[in-house]
Image 1 (cartoon, rainbow, N blue to C red):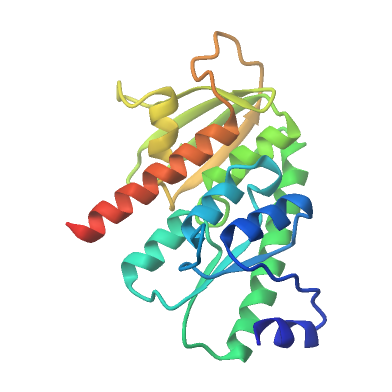
Image 2: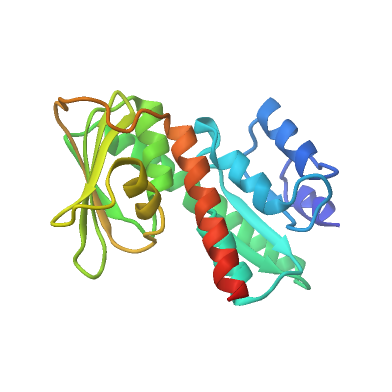
Length: 233
């Protein structure tokens, strides 16, 4: 029914039987948008989105959860994984149609604008609009070198150094820990604040020693675990 409605609006829709099938199809032919349930056989929606987000070419792929799981904890879990929207069942097809159009318009505009600005001396923005996961993915794809500064609403400041697109060092100002890998995992939880990226030479050793793909995949897993623990406590 969802496919029929969206196809009538002019979209090309490809359906999958479960999460593993969806992942394989997305890898073979990257879509412009993924609409997924949560409760599916073989691979659930949470795992599907983590797997998609771990791949650089799909790090900013827009995702809409369409699910019967409607609690606030489930919504928070979905958005922490990087979902662009969360639609609980039952729903109106007219509403889904509007949300699809809005997510595609917003995401495509954001990605293109951020890509364009990464070629300029400096880039500034809102973490509520462009999250750290999307920023690191675009920086890796563009193989940029420089310093990414994050500020949260409480005044905390973090600095992330990248060289040729890879994170080599991360720390919080005036705080000895967390640093490097653990700092990135911590910063992925920041959903509000501002960011600024300045291109500059970055010297010193690579203290992270892992790919952006691994950082984002493991960070999403840790956030997911923390969300589940909070929901059961």
